[in-house]
Amino acid sequence: MSDSFDCVTQYVFRICNEEQLCVHAGDAEHCEIMRHPTYERLRAKAIMMEGEPKPTRLWESMVAMGRLYDMRGDDKWRMIVLDCVISSLRGRSLRISRDLYVDLSDVRSDMFEAGLATWTETVRGVPPRRVPAVMRKTAIRAAYQRATDQTRETVFERPEDFLNEDGFPELSGLKASSLIHGADFRNPAVAEQLRGERNGALFHKNNCMNSVTRFHEDIRAGRRPDITARAAKAPMLARSNPFGPSHYYYISDFLPPFIGMPAAAEALGIPESAAYHMVRKGTFPCPPTRMGRSLKVPVRPLMHYMDIPDVIVHPDDVENGAAHASGLARQFRDPRRE
Image 1 (cartoon, helix red, strand yellow):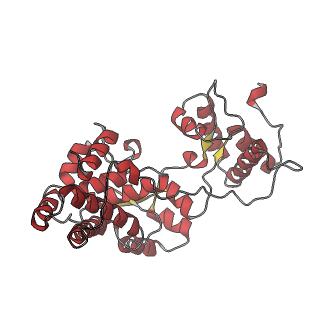
Image 2: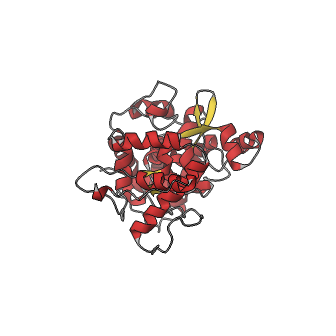
Image 3: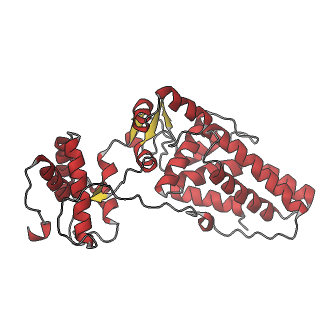
């Protein structure tokens, strides 16, 4: 009969399959390092021997990826870290069960729950390299607590029951003056148009509309299906066509996925030396990931922390907003009339 440890391992192997995992950037396409192991090899390297996980760069990168994916609402790397931590406790859980006369499944269930709770509690104030060791110690302490509190019952069935328990609130809208006068802003189509026009005006202000226009050409030509498919899943999109391609995209899709620490420090308004000091203390607001000898900061979590909305926009609205800002207002293009 499978216990919690087995369920977690089966779950992680199922979601990872035989794909190559990039522990540096999450996506191998954006990574500067070419060596990407399967999960079986990554797991074997992480839990090479039973005992306290050493604060290696591998563990540091795994924890950083877990924090990054948590911000996206994806549990993949969180569960990878949990599986590697609790797998190093298999022998210890057997000894606790045997020596203290406690059911093995209860011991492992307690260990898993404690590890998951510790993962959440160490988001702030604990450097990524120390998180696995803290999770392991907490899990062992929870298992010994079982022996002194036999009345508590804990049942573990599926790891999915514990996933996505943290909320991921949507970001607020941009605070800018309206480009649409006399319109009903409660109308989803109007709100959608306004959202795109405001961002188009910002793109124009930052002199990047040439790049945005080329990006839009790729979208309209169907060369970025991964981007448009992700945005099209959102509800209440006024021009989403169920019978044809969608042209919507998230603002972050136009931006680079990672930036260097100097650029991130500048965006946060802090000295670069202070940013590196915060990383070492585990207090940097966005989990950086290591690529070779340098640290890179993911853009989407940085936007989230800075309250920059990662909204869904339509190319037509963005271009109209840029035209408004440049004084060349054009009639709104509606693909439904074309």
